[in-house]
Image (cartoon, rainbow, N blue to C red; front, side, top):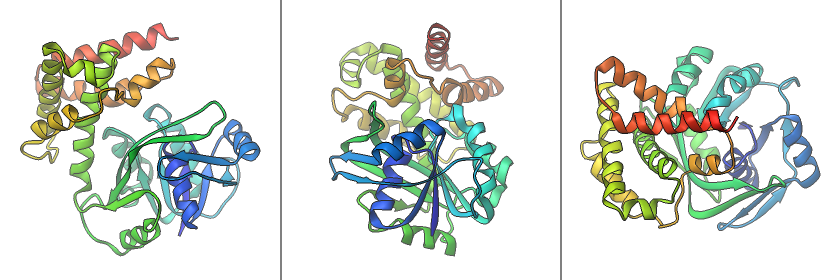
Length: 305
């Protein structure tokens, strides 16, 4: 199976690197700067699950190549439109597009661009970052990618994809309920990213205060209400389950959004929170904690220009 990974950053570089380590046919769609880094240093994984370094196959948007069997999309939401333009020449009649973005609005964008049948569901949990030299540094036991047909069917193409993903040093898991799992992650990320970016602190100190614990519960509750009004297939007690998960996280755990703010990078304010606020307004639902988090991120965007 020919696999194209859009980007060779902290997420795409890690999972694509693990697939290449196994021996799969993996190509990375990159820009000039990243291509230069990879040619000079190779793609390097430094991980608690084992290090790996290799010279990857790369491709740029203006170059020609045959369509790929699957395209793994691991960009940030604010790069989505550019990524769609870049990968379009490599999408064929039978190409599967597997997005790993947080949130849900990107699914509609991808369906509009490529059609309902080409877009499958996906998400990942991995704590990884790039250092100054472009090395992928992965630091925790969790390195999971979950994928599946959005309607839950066990199709022949998803079986082929499961076979290609099997036997790697990362956890690739086929799900029959991927849409629900994507919404659950959206709810989790909305809450964790929201409170850690709002208080500029790891999750440990936040949950130790009454104010922090109240805020966590409020964001979970408000977000879940909006999502259920959108007919998201959330589990009945998902708020309680995710609150327990957040209580059990490491004291020093930070969200990737918070880390981006610390590096003065762009954030996914509109993709994660603007989407829910727009839905809440149409539903006539009050979501003051989500508004506070969104306002904090928009002020950061202005101040960081």
